[in-house]
Length: 218
Ligand code: VGL
Ligand code: ZN
Image 1 (cartoon, rainbow, N blue to C red):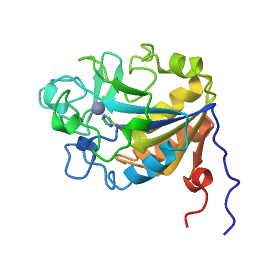
Image 2: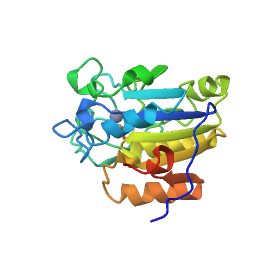
Image 3: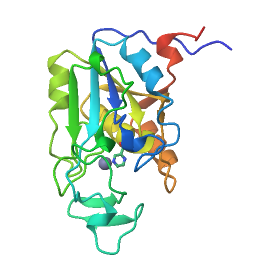
Image 4: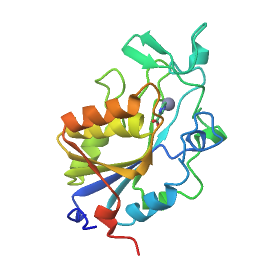
């Protein structure tokens, strides 16, 4: 089968490796199917980029995104919070706990920054760029722009939440945005995966496969 035309990565491209943490791995508090399978692929991708950002979901205990923080609420339920609708989750990625640690095989040495997000008790941040209030910036866009980055390639966990929100916000910040589909895994709760792809298609976030960057596997 002929390959889609290859994408050549240069010094204006950045890779975001999103939330490859123990709690999102099989056996973790918020396990994503196959989450561990993509780590070697993410490492191979990271070796091709001059700018690699690793993100870490990093919540204080009792975070507003936890079902346990709301009387009578269940995980996966949607709750109206101060800044809008929030999907509630089992407690996950609590600061300093083993579940918040990055996967031990992730080649973090490629990263120039480990960006922590979701740190404020009352507000979530799926996105690596802007918190769920829609206005508090993490500073990542400015950092990437200062380094001359024009295109952002996102991979990691989960396709339909933190990867999608990060890619959409990359676009909103004026970057070209790509999601490397086979280097992601999804939660897919209540149709969230197809909704995320629909929003990304509409925003011209391009869905690509790792082979378009790495070349055909041998
Ligand atoms: C994520 C749900 C809650 C993610 C983080 O990394 O996609 N999903 N917190
Ligand atoms: Zn979270």
